[in-house]
Length: 502
Image 1 (cartoon, rainbow, N blue to C red):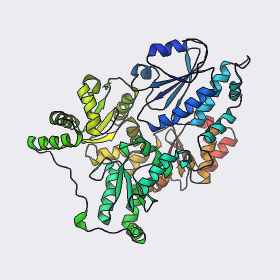
Image 2 (image 1 turned 135 degrees about the vertical axis):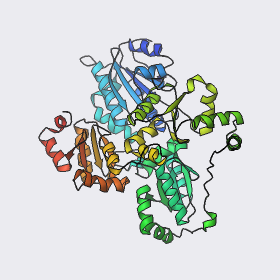
Image 3 (image 1 turned 120 degrees about the horizontal axis):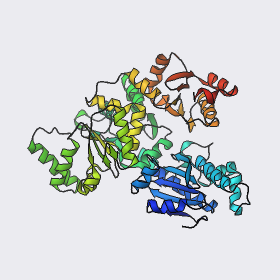
Image 4 (image 1 turned 90 degrees about the vertical axis):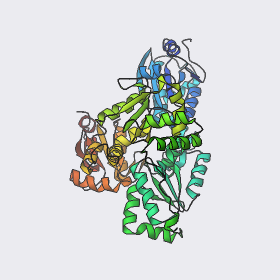
């Protein structure tokens, strides 16, 4: 490859191709993506737009799971992930779907590369005004920072989500299905709806990443399960539990004319206990019929999945993972101090291909707890940060029950800078939360966050734990810094960044 810029986005087929490109003079921007990740597909459109606007830079795509050598070299553990290179070395990275940050970083690396010389083309003028670039991209993608979080959804996806929400008077977006919930929160809401005696539709968000990520924006609610009644969001698990206990949920269903079904028509748990070889064979034959796999392979996969209370199907081995996604899950399990077994899917293509069909999950790694699929690296990371992973392990009897205090400690220390707010950083639900988010972003401080509106137990428990009665609450390395007023004082005095980096 030459030293000049290229036209459009090119796919990298090997590490040697990328190394060759890095030897040139042009800045190089690499997008690590995955075919199963909806966010990757969305950012791909932005990436292509930037490639057209900055023709003197080289834009490459790398399919992260198919090119493990390259992913390993750049420590890629999640997608989408962007690497910015100049003079053969990495000068910046970006993780996640953030069009504005991507545009800024591209503009900066290009402008820095041509600083002190004439701009090689008029299109490079955009690099001199990154703010204008950022404004243009959201407009051309049909979104704006001032619009609702769902405004950047495509019309087709928004229509699909609306149809799902309206498909039943009561509808639940959950992990798993009513017969086999894949998390404790989903199981709790299913049991509540059964106890209320109402018919409901459901959608397994583990089966469709586009729906999973889209619903977070569509409903402006960051977690699952999500319960809807007559097209309106009721809330998540905690809200459903509270309304069920007070009788408000029954009143809500009555007010909206939701019919109550007889107890005889409630869904029956079809999970079978495996007490004998005959039962295993019967289960394997049923699974074979439903998946199209032969009975022998179905039986083998079932035995592998249940060979350990915590089982990981991964690329490589725990002491030598062959991809960043597998490494991330292993690190999380080690942080949780869990005993687990693993299977290297690279060593057995029959298992590798068969398990995708068996689990109806298209990628690796795959984590199973108590014989039930939890998900891949992104789901495991999300559950680890929220404390849901510990709760699932406790429900399965693998670890002792997690106390609220333990969960709060885990949340507070899940990121060096941790913010508990109303809403999310992209869509704060109160002015104080918005001010704190803006201050942290202005200082260029990376931070984790938790939406206290999504979990009433955390919301009330943290007030007692921290002895701080209001939100937002900002923590640094597990220590409470304070709320909105204190943070703004630190910002005004120029001490905010130093306080959060000591």
